[in-house]
Length: 304
Image 1: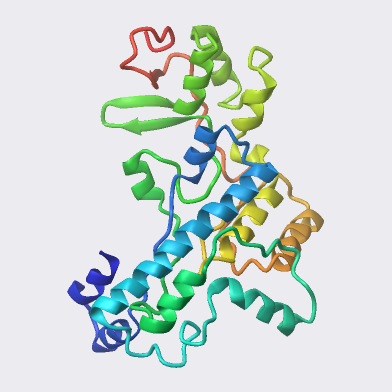
Image 2 (image 1 turned 180 degrees about the vertical axis):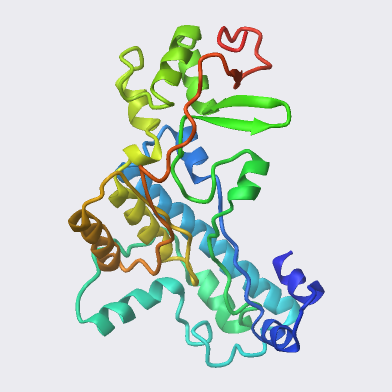
């Protein structure tokens, strides 16, 4: 579908059209990474989440590159393929040793893989690639909201936030959290009011077990280094780059410097916005505000 867009697109300038048709770059990404962690019951700031980021992106890269090569077999390689990294058998993960050689020092990054790439490499060697670039993870904020998942690869921003439209004001609550609390028989009006009191954070609510608190941290309760390490492990499979916001409570220049130096040492290509707590607050929900959670569930006391 993305390759078809290149041919069917409207180009405002002849130069843009020429470049696109020559290089045929696309950017296949992902969204709903936090949703996957919730479903797997994995905390965002854990080694298991970092490993999942690595392995899931490796799978996406494997099939994205193979699919582009299959398209090349059907439709032909892009016209500037000769001499490219693909043509020289340099896949994204192969460029990490080149970066280390350029810097003269090793990256602080696990460069292992879990799949056998022989089939993909052999196919690319024989048929080439349809697209010069294949992967890029965009912020996906709008389409993620439309699809009902969390944007790109970010942690949950809040477990509860206010949404306003022509119908009025609504409190949106993390549905995965509600489901877990309902399964334990903990979800009721009293707990809902405590959530509102703490503006969505569950870390100070004694009624909630610690294993749930660990999984359902809000983004400013997650150590930024785990966000960066997951992004770096993911980035080794991406031929372009990824939207990676840095979230931190601190205003310390020293800590911020350490965060960005850590990203550099891991070989992370780019970061996106730096978001701090003071500039990122959302409206606090009032107790009288309508709730939008499991409103179709007649057994949900909070919704009633």
